[in-house]
Length: 484
Ligand SMILES: Cc1cc2nc3c(=O)[nH]c(=O)nc-3n(C[C@H](O)[C@H](O)[C@H](O)COP(=O)(O)OP(=O)(O)OC[C@H]3O[C@@H](n4cnc5c(N)ncnc54)[C@H](O)[C@@H]3O)c2cc1C
Image (spheres, rainbow, N blue to C red):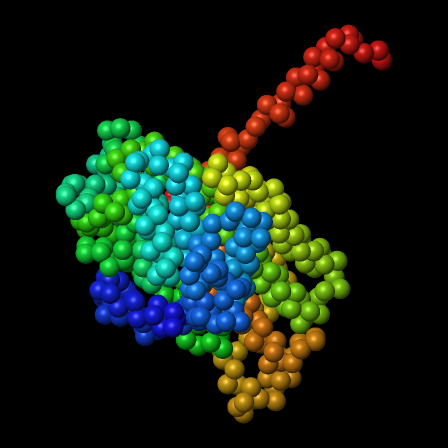
């Protein structure tokens, strides 16, 4: 059974650091237990005959199912199948678990799908990506990405030795592979991932070529340390219904002279080639498609909570509240419409892979960085002080002041108990450490949003819009001086 197999696979000697200790096992640790049981249940779906078609596909020529993030889409139906699996897992976790591996798996699937084109970057690439793709698909591997170098001093580059030493780089090549040293931030899901997809982010000059790489690194590699942030998991499910199940842990990775076998070195030593791989349209479109499909589940969840909060305190009749609730519907529809546009305007690449239209996906990713903080803002404005009008637990509903509790916590349309439960959920969503982390996540998961928008401008066909302006002015200048 895949759920259990996943949990057992984590006892592989990995070095996970939490609150000053190296954890023997994360499986039953309070910081991970709820999240791991959520992931176990999701994995289990591939073994359930009535669920597996929702999240998986039958591997060609085999009886076995794999998750649809590994499906290379050649038809609209296959693209829809990918969407269906991302939507299903996201909805099952109320949009709260964004990195269930389907993003990083999609990246690997995309590089595999574009392997004939990408072999121009390195003659071994095609063989390496094919063997890794098949291995990851057949073993149900959980993958996550870590691309960004640690925040030390962003005003300095590799000419500063403090930066050069700490950004991930090759220190030695051996017969077996390369030895790397340095750090990467942030890898979501790191403690329970099987492999990390690591790449460099910046464009380096030839003299800094040892910093350019695309690697696949097993989580239990000797010398690799996974350093977790504080846990936002809370076993007290009544107060933290989301934190109890959905805290996807973020971590920083320290590479203390880690050997990466040649088979897992996809590229190294050439920044131009690394950037070309990272810019590959097929892979990015498949991976970023997952980002925006899962985002819909999150917007739907926060919208549902906001509607329920507004109804529960009888404020839906006020015009400004209706305006804000309408804005939430607009947000959902904008993202859904962009996904439909991206899917219906998908075009085959040179290998016949059906590639969603990336410009619409980029738009959805960029605008999403503003939508989610705005949705949080709206929920806060509508719930107002009600988020604090909650008892510390539900026990008082059954104790000596029970009667007063039912009297004073009652809502417009719901019982006191239900209203308290709802507001606790809403606070977990927007006010708890987990909630704040989600707002930060939506602002930054896709990289720096400022540079995301800027890249949209830089890559846009601007002449199409500017040329008619000059044409209009040319015509106008021929018309002479206008009469008053
Ligand atoms: C909760 C969370 C989870 C994440 N999970 C992952 C993950 O699993 N895998 C992954 O790969 N990434 C992940 N990320 C994204 C990633 O780690 C970075 O946070 C993101 O790319 C932004 O980079 P940064 O945080 O280093 O910000 P910085 O680049 O340090 O930016 C800080 C500020 O300075 C400005 N700035 C810095 N440099 C420049 C410049 N050159 N030009 C203009 N402005 C500049 C930025 O606009 C910003 O305002 C995650 C992020 C978050 C918040």
